[in-house]
Length: 152
Figure (cartoon, rainbow, N blue to C red):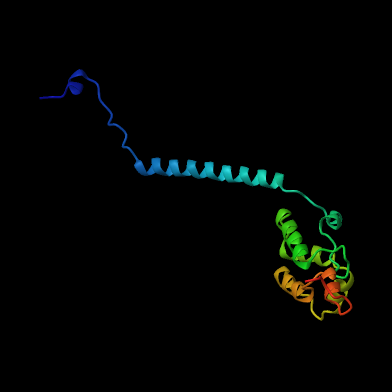
């Protein structure tokens, strides 16, 4: 029995084959483009929100560290402040060291100037500073022989 299409004089074209691989590839490519665009937008927003600080503004950001001054903070507090600034402003290890060491004064500056090698990372500087200046000037005065210290 002949089919109705051949008897009516019309021909049918076969339906196109469904290419699952091409559909998956197109879907994955579209998802990747969307993800890349989203990441680029996020990065752009973060860069725009990041504060820009010039080298000339550093003096007001990093506090002075002078262990012989009663106004100076402890080495631990000073290092925490430097670490916070480095994180906020995304300073590299080298930039952090440069900004921090430029703020040494008094005995800290004399100590630094007396070092034979200054080629250290910021984590190494932190260890060195904590070892060299374990107490504040006020605590040193309390521990001096002429001071009886607090009443117990």
